Length: 381
Image 1: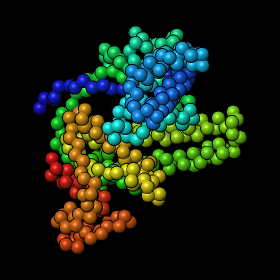
Image 2: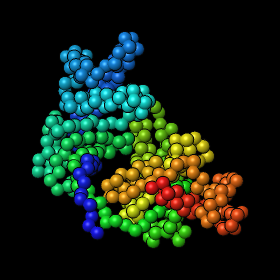
Image 3: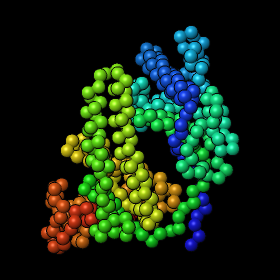
């Protein structure tokens, strides 16, 4: 059977880069100015709404920015590219739009110590020529490590530069890419998320699961817990405000970055394999925010990163012509016998295997749940 035609999608390609001292200084100033503009605009919008009962538009915020640049106190805003400052105002506008639509909480001020250091450049603020990227007011092209090529003939529309807490610099290049759906597959699978096993599939897949259909949980945070604890103890001993404390803080951030990178890499490989092998994937609609309120399991649930698994499955299924079915969170997948359909009266979390009182079938709790999720997903289709 012929594959469907390729679809054009906006896709971000992220790379590490190594700025010169001059570029690092200019970008650090840009990060600070963008944060300042965001916070001042948020303060003015909040004041106008509280004192006058009116909403401030993006156009009014942009006019405020022009006025701020003309003052002696904020004249330094003119030393960086104006585009990241305008983008900060657009992000604030989006935050208010989501708030008034009841999709998000009220926008919060960006902290100098806690917020993500980033700046967004649109097409008028960077030059892309012969595979080299030059940002406005940075002088020379960025020294980018091209870990993978951009799509052939790609023309970046937006570039986002960021620096993480570990001191690493990244550039995210947004451009159009052609994603071709995969050949139709025969497989269908149900997924049950867990802690002991990261995922349990309704059927085993060679090379991906064990004989029971379970994917081992690598527990990346637990694997580096001792290293993280040592780094955090060293940080706690350093004097506040000292250079040694700043260095110790970076060492802690590097351990966190290692955990995050390994987890993301593993989840990408896992979800890609699941999507390639199956035409229909059924999952449960878990409320992770509520589940992590259980303090005994919160750390393990966060390490498993169920929300990230679902997000990856959603966009990969959309890209590659697969179907992702989400089963209602109240569906009794663990208590329902997949052989006869009788629901057990109770199923405590510590029970990992059980015998159906109606038909006598013996079930592994997770495998049974995965099979029920698949059956419910196929029924919902």
